[in-house]
Image 1 (cartoon, one colour):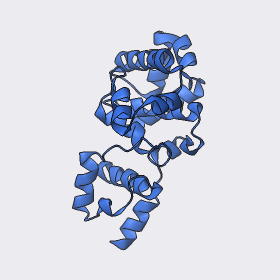
Image 2 (cartoon, rainbow, N blue to C red):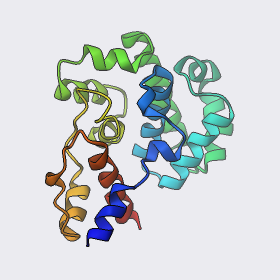
Image 3 (tube, helix red, strand yellow):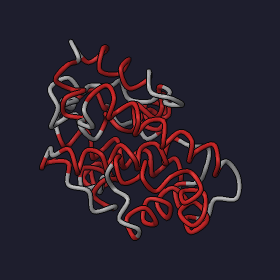
Length: 195
């Protein structure tokens, strides 16, 4: 069991797999993770979400202004199609465009500003959930990997994470939630669910 826990502690984060460096805490890296989180929160497979993020990357659409300029038609085709979408491509494109618009209008395009303006972790989650189509799961995806870097980022682990931890008899409460170790264990447990 100890070997499994040690392996979980070394789990790669989803952001790391996409080449996103959240430690930088720049608006550019944060937006890339925000976009990826929206894709991972959609009703599609993780592989399609990852492929779609890479399509955004290939087309240099990793800033809200560039995405808005590209427009809905370009997001649906070629971006979503290159990613492997066959359903929800129009809905997800609309969501991404509306979220880019909200981010620019309300926070000057800055996710760091969104964090700064939030009173606490609950307000931060509520601000994210106020974006079009973003629910608690997508907000959790975005915030969980930011725990070590954002003071107000401290979402509760998803019920699935707690269930898998119980199944494998891993006491996740024994780790500080704001630590990178906890975040890596959480990512590893999520992969066990999918594995």
